[in-house]
Amino acid sequence: MKKKLTRWDLAEMKTKGEQVAWVTAYDFPTASFAEQAGMDMILVGDSMGMVVFGYDGTVPVTMEQCLMICKAVRSGAPNTWVIGDMPFMSYHVSPEQAVENAGRFIKEAAMDCIKLEGGVRVSAQIRKIVDAGILVMGHIGLTPQSSAALGGFKAQGRDVASARAVIEDALAVQEAGAFAMLVEGVPQEVTTFIAQKCHIPVYGIGAGLCDGQVQVVGDLLGLFTAFSPKFAKKYADLAQIETEAFKKYIDEVKNKAYPASEHMYPLKKGEDEALQKLFEEYAG
Ligand code: KIV
Image 1 (cartoon, protein in one colour):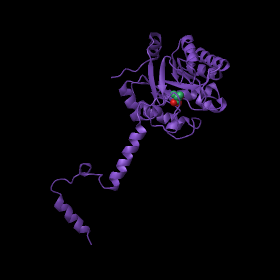
Image 2 (cartoon, helix red, strand yellow):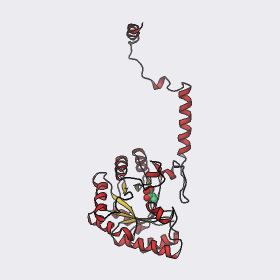
Image 3 (cartoon, helix red, strand yellow):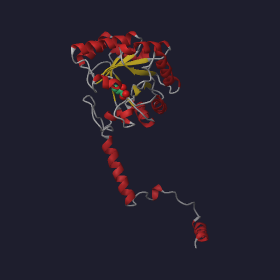
Image 4 (cartoon, protein in one colour):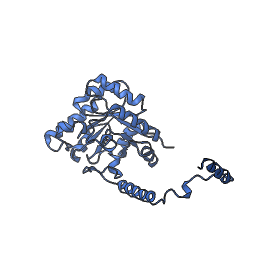
């Protein structure tokens, strides 16, 4: 049976220079396939807003949607480190609101830790959640929940002023007690500096090499076709496989090729005659 990693395993992997591979998941089967494949971690990302619910972004995602999906993923991957992503406005109001909602991910959905977006501006929230004994992963750089404030889904840290802001966020996240952080949409040079400067693991998405990588499952499996970020790499084209399968199914239903006899339940032996009599009873 697969052994679930601990925060100390993740810390040791950083020390040894071993990469951590993780992916998002939003349902039972995907979570179980990821676990069977040996994925180190799974993120129940608020990217579910786009990938599962078809919204334009992550902002409308609610606590209830996240918790329901976290529970499905936990059932599919009982032996994998699973991260619950805190949705927009579930931690922004106050440190008290943040700890209460973080607690729901742990208590109700059996998550191993939570992730939230922001650095300096949410350090009080991170500290409060950590003080409650809950592990926090920070998320800095391109933070999709604040994409309007950032002027769109734009890479961060590409000039010195912006790089300084990203570095300040990284230091604030570590200082507040986070056990790890995710850096999104940042140049390799800035990510390398942060990963070397910080003693906690620094993972990336669109941030070049660091202590490990995460991808959105819809991008990785070719299931999300609305757009493809520069950093996404497609390892399969499930959209094409699904569409082809649906087309074939429609065709077979229309042509009565499906269901065939092997898809039908046979009568019990010796019931034919009695059944004919039954039909006759009902006839005219
Ligand atoms: O919600 C999400 O999928 C994320 C990605 C950036 C990994 O946070």
